[in-house]
Image (cartoon, rainbow, N blue to C red; front, side):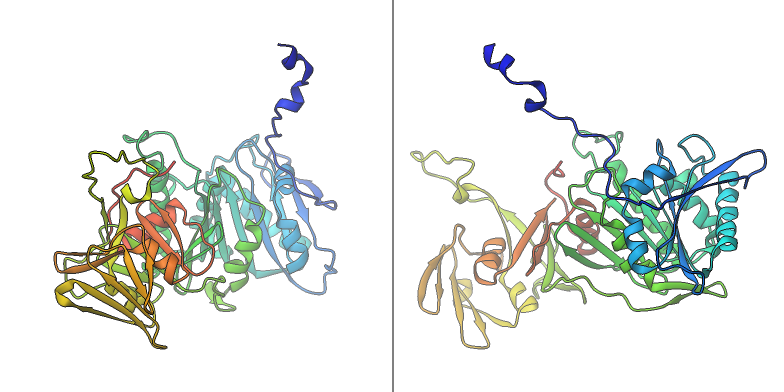
Length: 458
C-alpha cells in the first residue's frame, strides 16, 4: 500500500481528451446571417491566404457530425491545411438544431442557400463545389447529394452510412468517396458476438450499391492497399471509391482531406450538369499485387480474376497436418502442428514470370525462372532444392486429388519476397507493406467467390 501512495494518480494512467485537435486554423471567420426564416444561422469560413478575388476558387463544404459544430470540426480536421496548399475555400456550417442534423427538407434548403450565399461573397468556381460529412453529417451529405447533387462535382461520406430509410432514388450522377474505419462497428445483428461487423457490412454494401447503380459504374473494383490505407475504386464516368483505414474506429482521420482531394475531388468538375473528368486517376504506390481467398479457384489481379489451374477442383484451402506421435505433445505455437493455407503450385506461373513443371505422377514439381534459377518440391516433403542447395519449409508440399499443393504463405515470403496480409481467410499478397482491412477483405472475397471459415478478427 505504501507503493500505491507514493505514485501520484497521473503517473499511473492518463485519460486523453475526447476531441483530438490539430494546429489551427488561426484565421477562421465566424459568420452569422439568417438563411432560414426565423433563425440566425452560423457557419465558419476558411479562406486561403492566396485569395484576392481575381481567381475563382473551388468550394468545399464540411458537414459536422452529431454532438459537434462547425468550429470544433474545423479544429479537429485538416481541411484548412489542404485548402491553403491546393487553393480552395472551406465552409463549416452549424446544424439548424443543436449539434444535430435532421437530414430533412429544411436542412437541405439551408445548405443550398448557404452555397448560394458563399458564391455571392467570394469568387467561387461553381463547377467545382464539393461536400462531405462525418457520421450524422455523412447522412446529411447523402440527403443533400441525392436531392441537390446537381450543385456538386463530387461528394464524400465519412463513418456514417445511411440506413435504407434515408436512401431515395436519384437521377443524379456524382463521383463519391466513402471512408470507413475498420473498427467502426455498430451494435446489433443476430450474430453480434460472432461477427461484430455484420450491421456495418450491410450498411456499407447498401450505400456502395446505391451509388454504383446511380452512376452506372463498373462493379469490378481496382484495389490498392498501401500501409494502413485500403482503397477499392469502381471506375466509370463518375467513380465510386471505397476507402477504409486499418484499425481506425468512428473518426475522421487527419490525412483524410488530402486523400479525398487527391483521389476524388481534384479530378472532377460539373459542366452544364454533366460530370467532367479533369485528370485521370493516379494509382497509389502499390507494386506487385494479387489476392487469394480460401475456397476460391481463382486469383485476383488488377487485370481481373483468373483460374489458378486447369483442374476445376483446384482450390485455396486449409490443410491440417496429422500428429500421430504418442510421445510428442505439440504446442499451439508449434508451426509444424498448425494448419496452413495451401494453393496449387500452378498459381505461381499465373502471377510471376516463371514456368511450373509437374512430373513423376505428381511426386515432383519444378519452378523455373527465365534466368535458369530453379526450385524443386517433392510430394510430402518439407525439403526444397534451390539450385541444388537444400533448403526447408515448415510445411510439406502435397500432391492431393490430382493437384500439387504448396504452403503458399511460406513459399511466397521465402522465395518470392512477397508480404502477406491475411485477414478473414483472404490473403493480400504484395511486394510493398500493406495491411488488409475487414471491409476490403469482404469486397475481395466476393470478387473471388471465396468462403469465410474463421470468425472475423475483432
